Image (tube, rainbow, N blue to C red):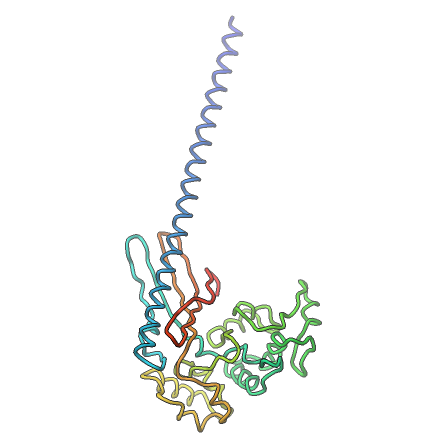
Length: 303
């Protein structure tokens, strides 16, 4: 009898332990599911807020086109949106004119060959940024449709397939700036230097001199120094150039055709914060001549 009572006690303790373990597991799983559901809800809320900011930015761009035929940094679209706190969240925004940058896709013409004037301009930009100008030829090889490395500067499949992780050149126009990190000679430092001054817009897109930063303006001419470029940028920042007359004595006549005073492509950066969660959305917006604005590329967390 004494032995049976001892066994019953042990069995009872085991059942209590098992019941406790089950209860703890169920409670843990419940809290985990609650956290997961809250995380998904926060993510969806952040995305919807970012998309709402995108719609607001599109409205600003439409109004801007109705009010002005030029685009410069003194207009409303170029003003950085300060942190806007609301019910449980914080929204920040910034719009940039991507046509104020050197378009890497202009390096290669529609015939698949390097455009000498664009190559020379990119080389001057690289020099202004203290980057090896040989990168211009390497970038041209990355985009052009052939597989023959340029001379003296170039890199095609024979170089990239010899890497620790082999890969090939795309041999077509670039769609995202992050692609530059795969190009020979572009390490983290070079990438950070290039990022504010280059774009990957459709081939043939003109450069807006009203929004171009000094290094990009300096790249327009072999004789322009950084002080002249800074002076031009400061003049454009006030009300923008009404015409291209100021550049007629700076660039070649053919090069004037590559310049403009207005823009179609803008990049919106939106940062939404809800509690400890933060989401950044990058949206490339196209504004057509009719004033319609639509996103061409939208990414979350990566440019």
